[in-house]
Image (tube, rainbow, N blue to C red; front, top):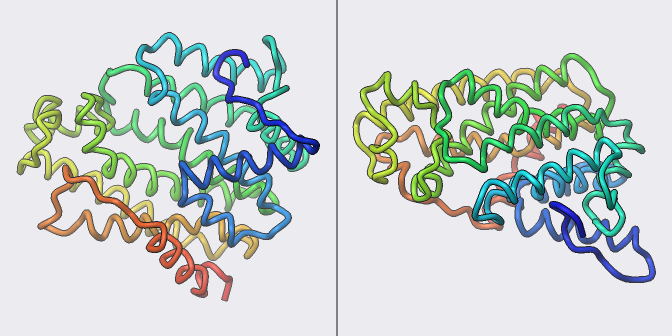
Length: 296
């Protein structure tokens, strides 16, 4: 397998094997999106899981390499594959094969997928996220793009869906940056905007020390506030999209729960928090039963 490709699958029915590979990959590495796909229309799940498996592959490149160059090569393979260039194509790569199937069947635009790959090049280096605007751009082209593409799999595209997807992605993405702070700090990687830290008298080394201080907490509280505003907007906009598209946004129920916990004065955001799969399923199931996600 060339470049950033995963290993292939074997068996009499390669298409079925590829779909199962994607399902298992998402279940193992992104259980929130896997679980949310269970609430989507059955005929859309395969394409959703292909999209989410692609995201898993791109997001974890940073964890699979020790130097930036091999990571750049892996990401370039995916870029070339989407463009129909390079050697190898999608043959033998179950995620690439399933993604192309989803793109063709659901008529997904390729440009957002290519931008998602490009944004994740940032992950390979230890340069700090410079500003809140830079973080918004990163999250818009990653988390928001995933919501938008998933919603297009579940239903027709619209300006209302794209507006919702942008705010949903910013809420979820900001919450994930905060949740990942203990891990990122341990490897001296900074997604928390440096300008935001410095505006509160803090800086990189204070974050990398791994101890919450009043200055770092003030910066984090500002980002939490931004995330909650985007979440409130997204939950309001949810009423404007088709019922079949609403399950795509179920992960917002977990973002809401996480942001509520993070907002508590006694929360130490440098202590890792683990979600159990049972807790994730319970939260998503309860949200799925609400009028907001069912459409009344």
